Image 1 (cartoon, helix red, strand yellow):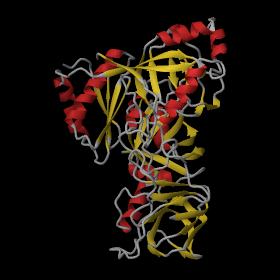
Image 2 (image 1 turned 90 degrees about the horizontal axis):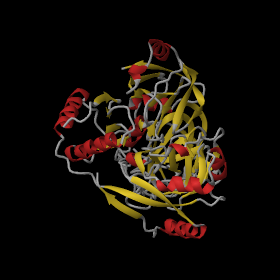
Image 3 (image 1 turned 90 degrees about the vertical axis):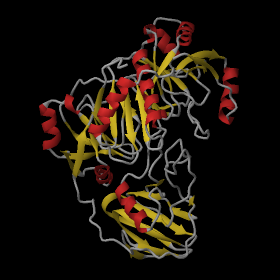
Image 4 (image 1 turned 60 degrees about the horizontal axis):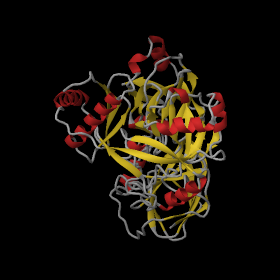
Length: 279
Length: 244
């Protein structure tokens, strides 16, 4: 078990998501920055849907009760293993009683912690990803115990990666959404010619942006939305739906972000700057 | 049998949207669901997901990037040739609602606004058969169509931070049930003790888009009983199979 000594701000268990129930209103969930997760799972030679911890902003203090191997990725946070600094995209051997603690957030917002073969919290409706009310809790708490397998020996094919990070990228690649062509030329210009900043209202469901574009009166019937859908409210506000977003909506879907751009956005926090590029 | 002019639009790298005319109509919803059923048989079940709602059907591929031009052509061809489709099996679900005033926080106010008595509002709300046009917003939240005009009342000017699970609400042209506790701005006129979404069941949500819903009034005693039955999963739902 992984014992949570201090829970930090908001840490969840996430895998690749909960599929096949979107027609019943169940969000996909899953890791916000799936690109970082695929890297840590690849390094540990885990299945791509192995569950990881998604640590947001202020991290927890964790005690490992069994031997395993871990790999970190995503945001840059100063993290220590038994008070010795450890780094992203490197594999570390963990022994019974080892303690990992999180310090200052340097860059990005969400940091991932993977163990060999993934965390083993219960699979509910096809996924381990936390989402209330499908799972009983929305994040880990003090004294939570998170199951994982014991691995005493693992010889990784690759010890670690020096990989180009997405943390400095600010341009989000956007496909046209179903209602994109209903925008006026002024609205399109405003969408692609200026920078936007992330609003306080940003979480696993959606990111709102501070700057508005022109108001509109486009009417539509409720229809499907996806993670990465860019919605435009009648008041001209932009809302970018993320992994825990509702599966249907009534606002025009003016854009659809690529998975890479969702991962870039998932590392942005209040006040950070982004822009859109049409692909 | 291309009944309607449909349009196909790209929706990112992994999804496409098929749209029917912009109207709330039973016949259009029926055609959307027929086509959805046809595609479920035609395409690989493990990788495709479908979200039908009102006048649209969204197809999502879990893994691969879609060849949009090819898929658009295939969808148009399949829609044109989809003629011998068998009737869809749909259900009418009869759901109990307790309209007692301690559960129905806004019922008296709604009755007052509509210039009706509380029993008239209850009678109007329960005599109607509603159509499920979509499921979304929350797991198991049904977008119901068919509210009588005489029950149209604006949503509350200030939303509540907490609406109880099972609350039955009215807002504009809509009525529905909150499947879980959530913030919300609808006028609460009753409570349904039966969980619409139950993650402990293999089929967690018994209702599908296209089904019908009718409410019937129950006493507070029956409500308390059904609530317990619902929680332990022994409540027997009343359902009727209906023709497509």
